[in-house]
Structure formats: structure tokens, C-alpha cells
Image (cartoon, rainbow, N blue to C red; front, side):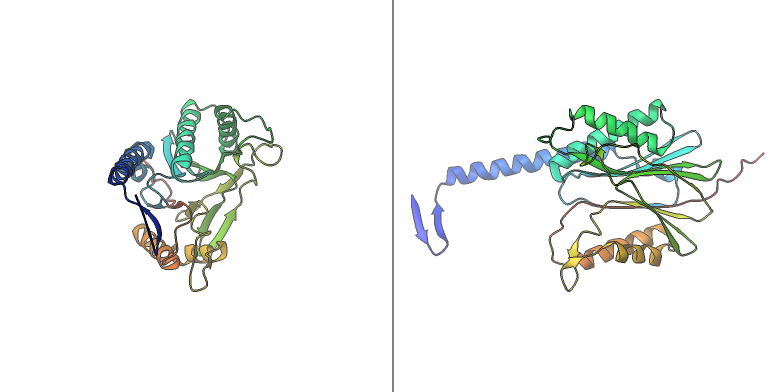
Length: 283
């Protein structure tokens, strides 16, 4: 039976209404469980703190599961740090992030790579094979924007490669940007080329930032515009000398104040690490 009112037709069917509520509850429970699985693949706080004692991670998924992910592991004298942004968000992005984390684990644990650029080249092969990407026009162009850092704590060197995502390093209140290549991990709009590696000498107290584009692309402020990279760089410089938790608090507070009542458009991930020279072993 239908009632016509000011709000238009209203379906009066309690059974359908309760079925709808049940379906929504089941979906919510499934997403909650999926988020547990996704979180289980992230490195634990204790592992990150053991490898890099001074760090913060500001992670704000748009939905219960995320297309953004972070990765940290240690092998010998090397510490591997990666931040990824998969095509989409929510469930589709989360599926891609699981692939990204799994492939990183496989590539790094096997050790058959030569620097950060080689990790990205290997990742691209894995993603294209997993998604059966051949370059046909009709294919979905799913992929991952990814930044990979390899810290050599014995030589105090950093090897970096990026698929769209850059690295920001702040030293003595000056920001140094190391750009990534303008192509994703996966099939891109142009022919795939090898990724570019960048080697940097590290100094004690350097701040390193890896991030996805969710923060800078968020609409907000008094004019409802994007936050943009210039403002983001200025924010990082302004907090770079602060302790890690305070940096995270300032960055989170800035994002929330900027977004205001606007809808969050994308997953947001900002990771900061302060590099310290390794102390010599006591004899």
C-alpha cells in the first residue's frame, strides 16, 4: 500500500524494511571483520618502534577499510618503509592494498632486487600479472601509487623510488623534495619504463615524510578549496622540529579544522620518521 504525501511515495512494508536493516547490519559486520584482517597485515607499533624509535602515523581511512597502506620491515642493516595509495577506496581499494602488502613482503623477503627502483619494477610485474593487465584499451587501469625507501643504517644512506608519490626530507628547517616517476605500479597511460632510483646521504636528525594525496586533495577552509601541496609543505616545515606525537597532533588537528563539515573525499595517510645515526655497539 502506498501513501502519497509531501515527501513523495512511501512504501509501507515492515518486512522489506527489516530485511533492509538486516542486510545493512550484515554488511557493516563484514566490513568490520575485513578491517581487522587488513589491520593485521600492517606492521605492529612495537616493530616500527624497534626499527625507527621516532615516528608517527596519521591514518584516516574514508571508510572502514582503506586503499591506503603503510609498510615497515627490517632486514640486516636495511630498513624498508613504503606508503601506498591504491586505485579507489573502501572495499575495492582494500583488496588492492592487500595485494600491495603481500607483494612487498614477497619481494623483500626473497631479496632479489637492487634498490628501491628494483622493488617498484618487481611490484609492477606482480600487479600486472595478478590483474591480467596486458595494455588493452578496455582494461581497468587499476594500480598503486607507491613510495619506497630503503635506509642503510650502517652507511647512513637512503635509497628512494616513487610511483607518483614523492619523498619529503626536512633538514635544518629546509624541505628537500625527491619526486617519484609519473607512472603507477601497474598499467599506466603510457608505455612502462623502469622506475628511477634516488640515493641520498642522511644526516642525524633528518625528518622523512611519506604520504598519499588524500590530505592535499581535501576540500575545506572558508572557500571550500583543496588544501594543496604548498600549504602541506609549509605545515610539515612548521612541525618538523617537534616531538613525534606533537607532530601527529598538529597534522591531525590541521586536517580536521580544514575539512570542517566537508565530506572526506579520500583515505588520508601521512607517515613521519626522524632518522638517527646508529649508536656504536658497546665493547
